[in-house]
Length: 64
Image (cartoon, rainbow, N blue to C red; front, top):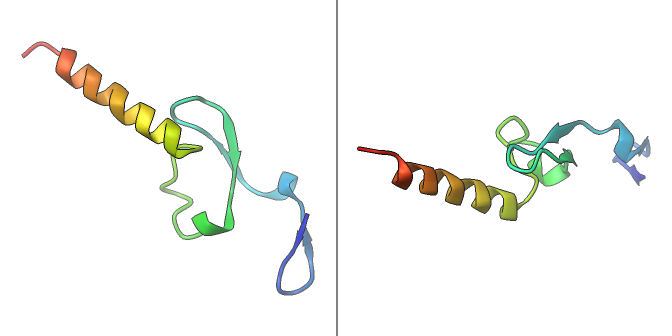
C-alpha cells in the first residue's frame, strides 16, 4: 500500500502485471519502469541474462 501525490492509496493488486518471458513468473509494475513498461519483458536481471545466454547457445548450435 502506497499513497500517491494526491493522497490516494494504491494497492499492489491494482497495479498492472506481466509474465516474465524467461521464467513465466508474474511481476508487477514498478514506478521506475513507468516510461518503459511496454518494453519490459523480464522480471529480473537474472532472467534477462539467462535468456540472452540461451539465445547465444542456440545461435552457436545452429548448423551453418
